[in-house]
Image (cartoon, rainbow, N blue to C red):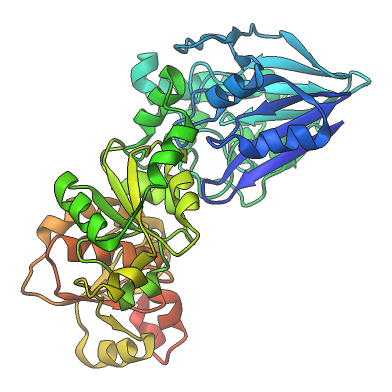
Length: 469
């Protein structure tokens, strides 16, 4: 028996590859399936089943391409009704993979089709669960994403989740291993641990939602408290996972079209495509194509693309570091942005070499900012999450979360200069590029964010804390 957790940090997502006696199963595969095909060939095994825990909202699964390329059937739990051929498993149904048995546990609540898969080892012992978005390490799945499709309130779904956890999961032996679909950083929960593996016993002890003395009403109240609005792309990803999508091979071929600087300029003007620069923020700051948006591959790329680009059908032209074109297209496809129509051949350096128009960002070092803040107390925008702001922020800084930039951007006074920071600079460069693309130039980015400012000589009394009442 072999169980491999294939964890993708950019999405905080875990897929699972299981082999036994010449057969394999894959649970919740990512959009690009070649890595799975390589594993199957390497191990000399046949893919028998593709198990899906639910219709994912935060990424596009590779189930359809993987099924077409291997012939393996796709398995969903009860109440799932996708628009393609699949096995509709019943609660308690058993599937054999080599000498292993996978048992279907219908665990609705996060979504109504949500299903946990219990793996029984060669001796028939309950060994581990693949809990999808039903149970995370330190958290449980948010119950507000399926309200419309289920025709229920988030409170009703939370109540269903309460019983799923207690009747199907907490009743399992404490030593059963928990393999969730996500970890810290995913928007599918609110309190996930950085750990990606645990046990039922550990979760009973440390997971706030699995307290043995918790009533249903207490569970509903705690699980629904503090939920932020889901990213805009979630609904589209659910639709793609349920209804079908274009093959990843086709998407990649389109995105790998290399355009010279002149061709790139013409295509951009003719199509109105979004110019997406995936280089590091520091490189973007020193020089970039006017009107381009920077979301760097080195950070939480896919989630921020999904949160900030309103339309997944938006045509996109890429500017990347050399050799990162395919990676950029791949990561975009993971969250349903399939309409990349080409990339800049030779990258930004080729653009400069042609003498094309460029722009750059106004930045200030953390040390210089600290001196200015002590002396002039300038206007400051803190674009971190509200919870980060509440933990600690600069005196009189305004909370302007990046996730809501499309709301607060219209309130900016173009004649009032302000300074802007996040934690370390990644999000600030995203915000800076959006502001610059929309014509705002009355701001300065603080290099290194508040993490760098803390290391300066700025007085400690300039940092304040707030707490929600």
